[in-house]
Amino acid sequence: MSEPLLNLQGVHTKIGAYHILHGVDLTVAKGEMTVLLGRNGAGKTTTLRTIMGLWPTAEGTISFQGESIASRPTPEISRRGIAYVPENMGIFSDLTVCENMLLAACDAKRAEDLDASRLEWIFGLFPALRKFWQYPAGLLSGGQKQMLAVARAIVEPRKLLLVDEPSKGLAPAIIQNMITAFRELKQTDTTILLVEQNFNFARQLGDQVAVMDGGRIVHSGAMAALAEDEALQQHLLGLSLAAHR
Amino acid sequence: MTSSTATVPAPEALPKVKTDLLPLLLLPVIALVALPLTGSFSTWVTLTFAGLAMGMIIFIIASGLTLVFGLMDVLNFGHGLFITLGAYVAVSVISRMTGYIESPSLLRNLMAVVPAMLIAMVVVGALGFVFERVIIRPVYGQPLKQIMITMGGMIVGVELVKVIWGAQAIPLPLPAAISGSLLFGDAAVEKYRLIATVVGLLVFAAMLWVLSRTKVGLLIRAGVQDREMVESLGYRIGLLFFGVFIAGAALAGLGGVMWGMYQQTITPEMGGAINVLLFIVIIIGGLGSVGGCFIGALLVGLVANYTGFLAPKVALFSNILLMVLILLWRPQGLYPVVKR
Image 1 (tube, rainbow over the protein chains, first blue to last red):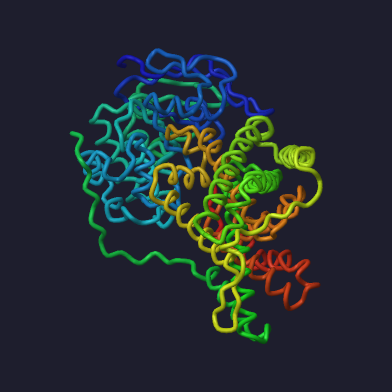
Image 2: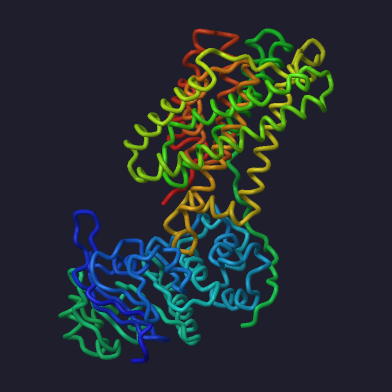
């Protein structure tokens, strides 16, 4: 494992009367993809939202590049180079694809200010975005919206991507497209923390894995080791990769 | 990947995006229904221009209110205070320039009216600054407290207006060059109503330009839909909201001056009286929608004038009735904003 980019130590998160995270310890290594697995309600999404400052950290520390970001304002966390793709994709449906991309590039005032070569690279990953460039994003299909959500996160170079269930509700062909895109993204040394329920999807991409249950990390290690150990899969996830294929 | 100027891809042949024109059609439909009922074409023209002018002024006042709600779910029942203050500030300025107002020269009239409007906008914008910091900010996310404290703020503000300017109605005469009517055949249309219609159109066009052509406008539109995502992209939504609140207050101040000139008299209660109309307009239009607010304001203006002439007793509740009918047809308003 290479040097840590993001480090969570004993993070607790409370939302109103609910205590969701109970001391999360998680390290995301630079240049790798770490996959956060777990059942519904395990605390995966809350972990991402806590990192982004969308929920306040009740206890514990979150450090990014060695500096504390716990409970800092969300815009400040984002400006440090962390992009977030939420579970609901966060697409601005009344805005065009172009306008959605423009908003993600903080310093660009017009479409012409976007980095052309990077845009071409993104169009290579997600060709549908070129076709629907001037279309209202709300008219895109679910898969196209997911592509836009990921594209928006990478329209400018980021140090860390937080991606919440990108395969959710997508057709198998689109999921395969996503896997290809994430593989290419990994080749650019982008660090990614990916929340997934689809173990087959996660297995093909992850370098490291952390499994959550009851608001805690109950297992962490190399993805390859978990992918090969069906008994461990059964123990941690209640299913085996063989059954999930 | 090297940085260079982006080439926007050429649009390919795609199915055309459907534009929802039905709410827009309501305007000519209502006007055409009213035509035979008024019994006279000239009366109909007069009423239609009166309705459009009234609608434009209401739009100027309500546009900020709908964006404020759309961005932060803040229900500001104190918006009426901005209208009242705008009108009183304008009266204070104009009363010191009676020579300019009474002059038959349009240029000299404008030399009094334009500064009065600008000063009113600045003063009311400053009040908006204080109002947001002191009254709105402590109650973010608490709708019931927002209603109570903003109404309370307006009551206190109106009483302060009475302390400064007195409780009596004050006349706000139209400048000489824009009082009176123009005749189109037999139809008399007040010059001021034409001017109010043009000013309203200009404000609407400027607002559309800002919202669709500038990055700040995109951020406002995006923030109305999903403020959390806007923050996740690195923008401070609180600052954006603060700016919109001040701009909305300044526009309400401008609207207050125009409403005072429309009524030709101002009272401390004028803002409170129009508050109900504002909420009807933004609910009809779809909370957070500027386009919906524009159509809603014109509908309210037209219906108020037609029913005021045809059935004065119905006019007392005509706008409530209009809102009920529209909400039965479209429960989220004419142009609802898709919110997460």
